[in-house]
Image 1 (tube, rainbow, N blue to C red):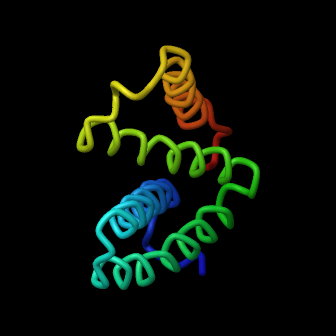
Image 2 (image 1 turned 30 degrees about the vertical axis):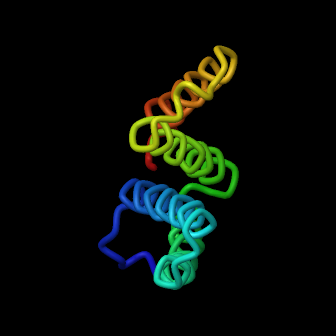
Length: 116
């Protein structure tokens, strides 16, 4: 599987994007109960699992989990804040927590061991 042309860092971004899409679609489905949204959610969900497996095989489980899961948390937060105007619903402490998530992602991406 190492012959794939997909960079592990691109796979991290794809995994986080697909997971954000799945989380957003799931929320929209519960709000509107549209069958097409449910079908889209069910089709995208396995791709999240597969992309995470690819990332994990390149970075190891600990680093892959911390990086992708942080992005997976940050993605839907950004969708909620930017597209659903949910910033007013966050407390100051929650905003600080979100900022710490972004700092953690930055540290994981910038200060990685050489060779990855």
